Length: 261
Image (tube, rainbow, N blue to C red; front, top):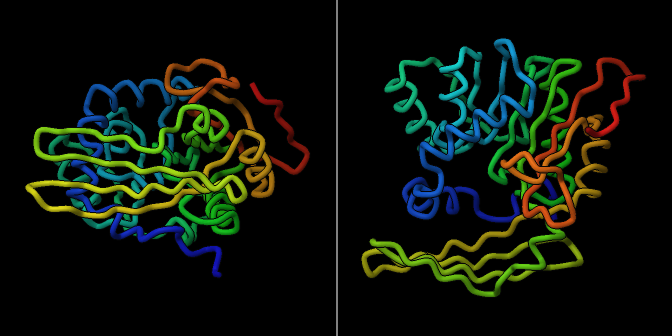
């Protein structure tokens, strides 16, 4: 198997209409405003930066960062998301460089002060492909630049994961049927959407990591952990944290070493 191939059908899962049906209410303006304020604080940003929002989706972070004066590139595989992002940028009166492409082939070198990967937009591939993404991040960062990674904490997810979750909405139902492959660290979700009496299957698989694994993967890409958090509440990463927000740094030189904060 080519381990740089996606673990699932990216085009099927990231259908814009279906994605917004599942997540649109969750990723609202209030949540997005708070997350941008929090990431500014976590990254200790006090001056305009050049920022890459990788897998930017419909631009909820990119547009808000641009409104704060940052030079932002929003990068995503799905043209439909980028269309939404551009319309939202126009409505806000901000400029964002939205680009369509695959995170496995960024092709950038020492360009950005900050790279973002938010809302579990990581783990779409097996380890070799995920490492390729991190290598691309490292190449895209300027020396001393920061990478912010927001993903689920595998160790804790396994303590509360249910085999079935049914979510009812006004215009339909979401059925998540989950299982976990402990040997390969893969979460399988046989998701079903029912809307207007029609069923759509959205099966997908994602590689989940625990803190030790993600530390080692970042190290292989030449990035060192700078700070860690247990989620958007800015609490420390702990054995009970459902999410982990890792801030890693590209060394200024080969001798630079940072201890996690």
